[in-house]
Length: 156
Image 1 (cartoon, rainbow, N blue to C red):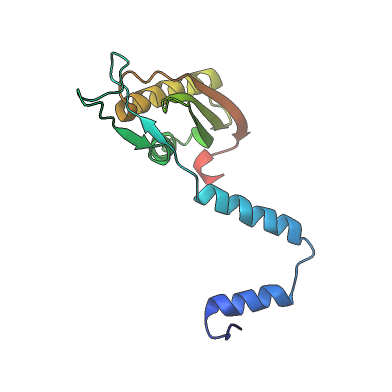
Image 2: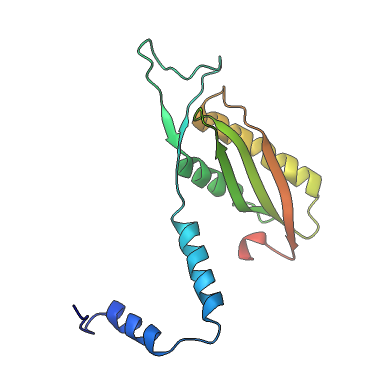
C-alpha cells in the first residue's frame, strides 16, 4: 500500500528518502539517542518500611513506585539550581525489586564549590528516595561532576 502524500508525516518521509544528508549516521545516532532518552524503560521499585520489610499488611501486599517516577522527581528537584543540575540520573533496581543504587552525573557552574555541591545533591537525593520509597530504602548515592560550564547550568 503506497502512502498518499497528503499529510505532513508522509511529506516528511518522502523528503527524507529523496535527500540523504552526508552526515546521515550522526543525524541517525542523535535522533535515536533522543528517542531513547524520551522513552525510558521503567521498572517497579518496592517501598521499604523503616524496619526493612516490604510487606504492607498480613496478606503480603506490597506497594511499588515506577522507576520512571523516581527519576522524574529527582530530575525536577535537582534541576532547580543555577549552580548544579543533573546530566544523567541512573537507578539500579536489584532482583529483589529494591532500589540498589542511584548514580548522578552533575554539571556545575564555574566557581561552584564542587564538594559542597556534591554533598548537597547527595543529601537531597536521599531525602527524595526516602519520601518516595520509604525510610527503609537506603541505596548508595554516587554523585560525579562530569562538566563545568560558565553561567547558569540550566541553559547549557
